[in-house]
Every structure is written in structure tokens, then in C-alpha cells.
Image (cartoon, rainbow, N blue to C red; front, side, top):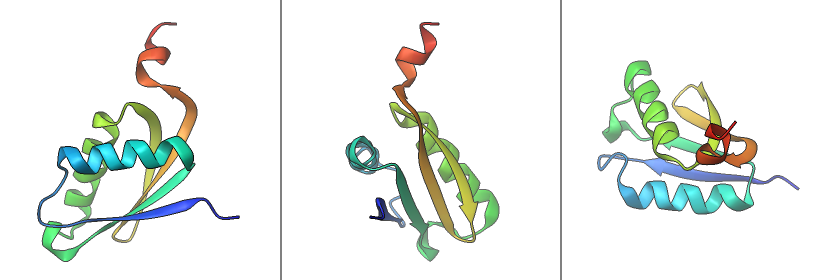
Length: 87
């Protein structure tokens, strides 16, 4: 069974509701695909900035890669950032 969920980022960009939704989805899914719509600024640099912003705001540790206009977030170790800081 494929456990990939899809999101879209548009002209409103990364608002708290998007971060909350992504956090909730990443608790149950390993991977999320986020499509950058044309209204969000569809160039490589803006998509990279969106990915970094999402990664920094999420409590769940994740990695990303960019494929075209899609950001693929993959949950890392399953621990949140605060747990990883207590090494």
C-alpha cells in the first residue's frame, strides 16, 4: 500500500494551517508530496525556499528532495527535533 499524501502550495504560501496539516499527516504517513502551484512562484529557487521553510517549521524531522515543481518530504528517524537535540 502506498502511503504518500499530496498537498498543494499556492499564493498564500506556507501558513500555520499548512504546517499543522503536514505535521498531522506525517504522524501517519512516511512521505508527503507537495506541488508548488504557479501562483506560489514556480522557479527552482522559490521551491527550494519553500522546502527549507517547511522543513524548519515542522516538529517532525524530515528530509526533502525536489522533483520538477514537487517537493517530496520523507520522515527521517521518527523522532522529533527536540528529542534529537538531547544527545
